[in-house]
Amino acid sequence: TGKKNDNRNLIEDIIDPKDLKKLLRTKNNVMILFTKNSKESSEVMSVVSEVAELLKGQATLCRVECGGEGKKLCRKLKVAPEPVALKHYKDGEFHKDYDRKLTVQSMVNFLKDPSGDMPWEEDEHAQDIVHIPDANALGKVLHKEKVPIMLMFYAPWCGFCKRLKPEYEAAATELKGHSILAAMDVNKPENSIVRKHFNITGFPTLLFFEGGNLKHKYDGENNKDSIVSFMRNPTKQPEKPKEPEWADTPSDVVHLTDATFMSEIQSEPSVLVMFYAPWCGHCKKMKPEYVTVAARLKQQNIPGMLAAVDATKEKTLADQYKINGYPTLKYFRNGEFQFDVSLRTADQIEEFMMD
Image (cartoon, rainbow, N blue to C red):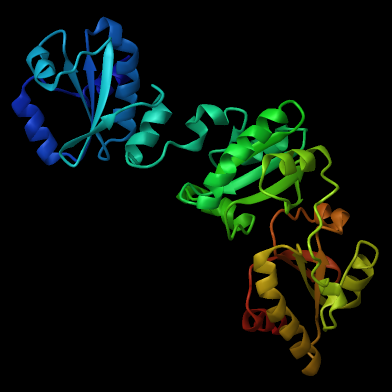
């Protein structure tokens, strides 16, 4: 096809050692495909062509035909491809032999970060883990899978994550067919949206999903046995010292349940409801702000109510209002839901309630 040929033109053929020298002086991220002959290298060549197209301007891909015009250069570099060899050059120097999968995605990952660790999804020990590349894929997995899912949010640089990985891999293998252990790199810029959505503030964070819905954060030990026993009996969360419940702390915030929700939000013309999870960091940060405003509204006789719902307990309400991230603020007028509100500070919330 025409496209193949276009991509093929993005690959420079190098014949002469002088050409190579010149190229390495001007380009700092170079992958060279050494081939024995065209026939035996056509498959790799089409992968390399596609990579060249995808990484235009970010990496340079070249070819040396050792069985043809590049014979002299291959001898000089002591390269004898059988039938191909891929070598990476960084900042003018030979960097390393390419040792990952001969696929477009693997090569793109490598050339985007040639000095970085191999992405976890390419590790052969991690094949029983479902690796989720982005928000779109996450939506599909949660929608499609009927079995319970544990999702580990990690960052490649995080030491605790590196320690957990082999344990998580072993747990995934043991739980195969029973439940799914998934993993997502939320250090990628395109996944910051997921990080925000689930309020991921530290790594690794493990969240447990059932029927496509977030049930709770996993609080157990970060080892294979604890993860496996939790997944086999998710209702039995390991004991952690309990923090006092927000609803038990006196304040002017009205705490709602499935039973009291409708009557309470109909009792005031203007109601702001914060859906929260007790473990969520952003919620903890916001609670004092919310409590402050509730007190101010009362002192100043401003009509309106600030209410809160523990979405991990009041599942029916959380499902009804499609709560899938915390905190979520929903505004009700005369008992009817109006819109979501993305305010976080006391001043912003107070100003909103006074309007």
